[in-house]
Length: 145
Image 1 (cartoon, rainbow, N blue to C red):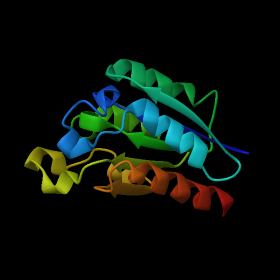
Image 2: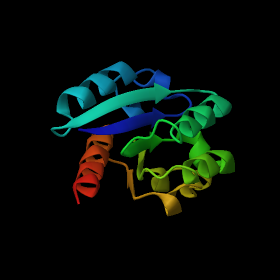
Image 3: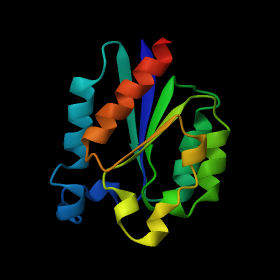
Image 4: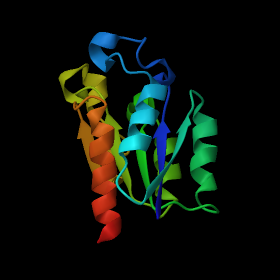
């Protein structure tokens, strides 16, 4: 049984409410339910969302003592601003997949740079919430091989 932690950064608690034309109508709870029911066989999911950078860093640091087999992370705006999140992710041994619901490369120029992409196993952008499913499948294949 593999264990995967799904991390969501700032404003993702507002999925389904904030800019539905960009992020869709699915709520974070709906997303978590969908991922739980559709996770690859033998994959156990844990979810964490925070709007506070230090809390997210602390949660990532916990993985040093309570490791997981993989991480799916949508860092939200921290993608483009946080060296601290990058540094935290670089301290854990679990592979991670970076996910963005929207195509960040088709948006404002400041969203084109990610501080975490170069240390990610994979990056999935612009696939809507389906990107999370792709991330789980990617991790499952990586963990199995």
